[in-house]
Length: 92
Image (cartoon, rainbow, N blue to C red; front, side):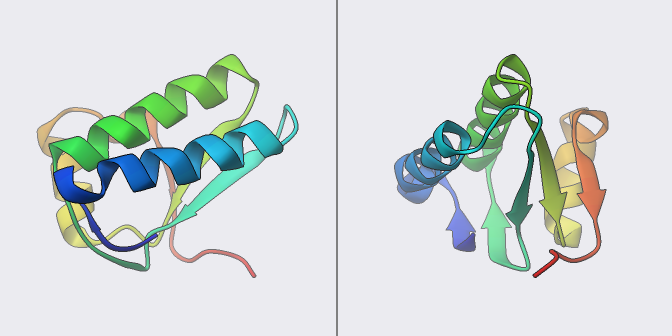
């Protein structure tokens, strides 16, 4: 992901995550690299939550890599921080 995960970009984010989830086999870890994401609002968070739910239904695990302080704060404020696994950087 790069740029803002907000209302204006929610459809694009949704399409990207849906395509990734569709192509990945069951049991896969889906790493969402947030290193270049500058902002996330409730629209972006809702897309991530929907992708997480869909992934769980398909036996996949969504992992957030390099979330910003703002992103972590948003997850904490919405009490959704425990729903995601975080890693400091995305693997190559």
